[in-house]
Length: 135
Image 1 (cartoon, rainbow, N blue to C red):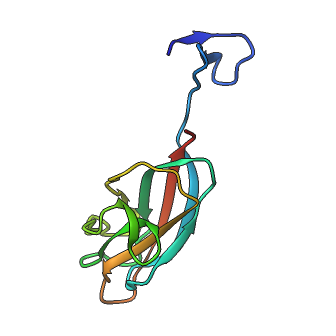
Image 2: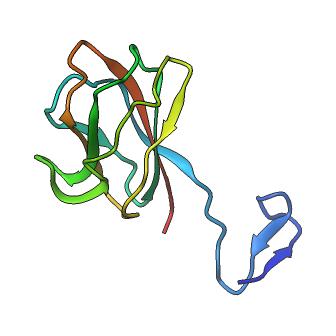
């Protein structure tokens, strides 16, 4: 693919030539106040037509010393693990820290399920934002 400058295009005067297109990462879903003490499924509705490329967690209510778990394509920890069950959240030491989870598989979904393997052990919440690109 070649990038060329064209008058009237929407990305700072540049567009993809030869039928290609420039895809930018956009937020496609979020779960504000996700429960990090529960091992139950927590569904995140996603904008249809995008592939999940990044999952960010921030605004932790407590220092996340114990919570671990992943994000799945189906409920009950079934389907494909987009983020592995071994993902830990220990980097979330305060509300101002942001953690980008390790993505195992990039795929298009309409719902992503957050499901911890191990809960925090005390009341704990954080905000989850899911980003993606158009295929």
